[in-house]
Length: 282
Image 1 (tube, rainbow, N blue to C red):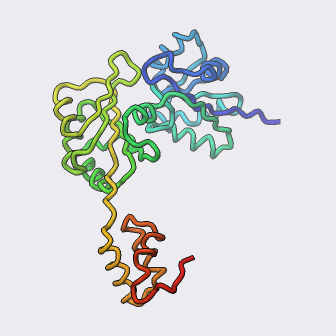
Image 2: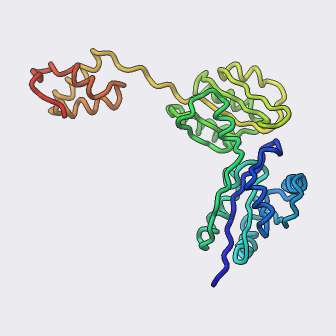
């Protein structure tokens, strides 16, 4: 019977070394090999918890040449994949290893833990029910502005990573292309100099006008939901559709999609158009 190892995706601290689960520590001790984005960085974590499991580097510049070595290790035992901080495979080359492991039939097991994305989101004070994760924003100004323009009407909260060196320029672009929205800038999350700044982006530009240091996660309010139409506009829109031969029921449905009104309320408001009092909506 063939022995098959599992690839464990182990989330590691994003700053504070205490932010690691008991399960993660156990698995880091038990696996046969740890594939680390930076073995020196991960080595400090392992030394702190007195873990001596062998490591192999796996990062952006060697992700293709190391695949065969790691897949071969999986044939005889378990392998842990870790990034420098947070959950591996998220905005790092780990997804290529995950893709290859799945293609070769190896079990891939997530081991949840720290994440700068969710940490910044829940502390931002902005809506959390739905959000769009953008990863690292484009470095080039033109590419960044193009992306922000595409997101101008997105109503979900936006989350992105940004370099401290580009933060000022990015905040300027956000104000220019998205308006003076509320944002949260989470810097150095869980570390000694943690800062979570909240407010309009115009004030954020002033606050971060000097030198900025540390890892930065941006949380940006989504586009505001437009106010619902007035009664007269709703009546007129329904009447115009019906003049085009569309049924009352279908006209109500179409207007409800853009007016901010429910179908039931539009139906009640427009039932008198052209003697429709006798028509019933199911």
